[in-house]
Image (cartoon, rainbow, N blue to C red; front, side, top):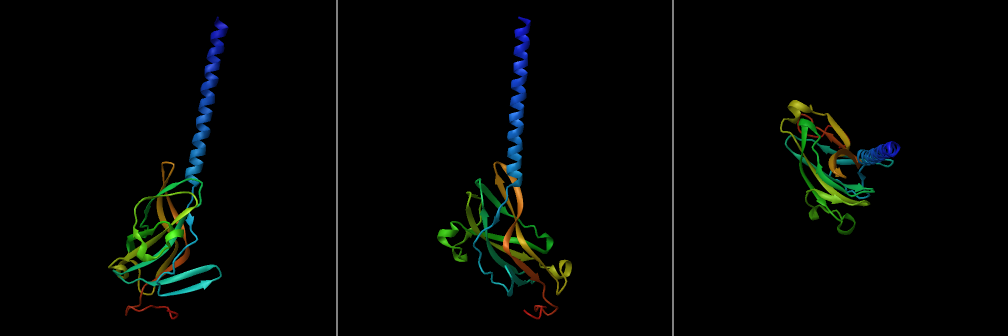
Length: 199
């Protein structure tokens, strides 16, 4: 009788240990999948209405004039390569005090409806299935005191990613998604004109 009770106790312990191991494996798989999940730039992008552009090999750069209080707009596609459906929550500012994301618009069903700006609707959270993409238009507004406090005349900055927030399997993630080209922003000279001789 004592041996039977001891065997049962050992059996229960083995079952508990096995259940804990399964739970740990599932938790590790969940964390690996969610923490490593990445979005990418899609295969569609618009030619931004930039001041000028340049191409070197596979890289394109679009140059803008950063005038205080003014806005610029650029567009690119965000692709979910899979294997899971994600919820794209927000295109994040991430620019600091020099500029802010003023508006975001989107074109859903990129492959079927195109990516014309006139067909874009204001951005709202959207489910993005695996192997699908959407096109977003981002409007950046420069601060009114850009030249006084943040960027002196004839200076600038560049970027090739856009920060977004998305949800995968219930976990909130933020990522700098490649946009597929470089944005180069130059502040004007003291007379409000571009500083670069090639612009």
